[in-house]
Image 1 (cartoon, rainbow, N blue to C red):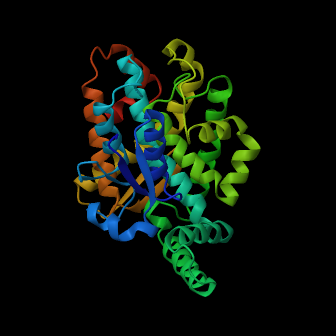
Image 2: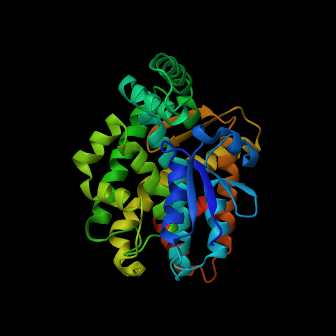
Length: 333
């Protein structure tokens, strides 16, 4: 009997869906367990109160979606989620990081900014947590979840100044994705890459919410097909070369990804200086937010991205590309 992994997650968690989609693509035997309905067993494996949490067949607990995927990729290298071209592999890693960090700002902002979205999300979270509970108990918990999460929207930097900017970069970014995905199944061709797993899960979660979902349905039907495809991805061909990707992928790097790296670099500098807040200009607006809590993790993830960039061999072509799209200075620090 094949060894079975156990994924403790939530349908409301993009990082959980990211890992589940990876396991489905790799055809790795696994069980999908809702954290709320399996809380006692979940506690055995979780060092931190986050999902996804992976229980290995050996009884080890793993957390954090990217390290989980990297560890499993080393064990199950085929079919590979990395293009053979080192430059394309790094770009995939860069876009995956963008999805985890900036794509999550898009999703989290839309989910908890407006009352209709708050209620919709809170109801679904509670449904995952307490299956079969009386309606009165569910209603009380919905109000608690709504209040707690509404007050956490500032964690992703959403405030009165940044709110319009977050929403505009979402619409701009999705429009660029729509053009890029017009004639291909996945971001780097006809098979899913690490980038697809990271970014599609955030876009899918946004699609499940009323406001962002309506935007996506109206302006990005191909993008919607893509994030649905990524729930259970299958190879439909091979990765493309940069020559065929560049026309539509370069604008995405030059736009949302550059903005993300600008923010991420400012955040890392603020953390290093032990500053309580960061302030950085992002395409004409001043982005200000606290650097406490999860922002420390973002600084760590930027350091990891820089390490991966430094390890790419023969980087002339990649360096020129990153310089052209305005990203090089943030990655070569």
